[in-house]
Length: 277
Image (cartoon, rainbow, N blue to C red):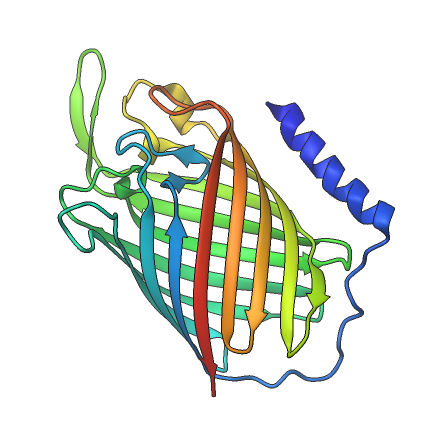
């Protein structure tokens, strides 16, 4: 499967060079900073987590309302709920987070984040083993690509592991990285409307302790490439409204026992409204 990821990165690079598309020169004008209040509704036609498709709940869509407040300093807080249409409960997951967006220069930026997840006791989604997530990201804009590197440390809910001879309850964790490359193609429309096409290629790697169903699966503790993901992000901006479509295709790597190992397609979308003050 490695050849799929290599081919994808080559095609994205080739298309950019062939058509001679580059980002606009950096704007040296000091940006005006605002407080931001963001209201968003997210949709995914199936649940995935870090390159792994959910095998416990079948193909079920998810709806997730989100609120995010960002201060002028870049500090932010957010909260979201998760709804699975057709189930008895309106919401069975609550996610809360704190973070800080940082701009080091016109080319370099980064962020720090901490999130905590609350799940209903009956939830069996693949992500429900996760309790906390600490993230650190660094991004660089080369004018051809925006390259991002995300480091994640996660800790999980208490979990029962079993092998051929023993059974024990432990609290485990994982370390992971996500390397992404994107390029934005902006199309200006009438009446201050903007359409942006943003192809993206990601490589995910890390340990998989929280996803393991058996304590004897040695690959779970190894730091390995776990997936290649190709996206075609489409953004439509209308004043304070932002619409997003994000069809993506995932090529899982080094899957564990019981995990879905074939390439799969996911369609996700969101609509958001942002107030700046």
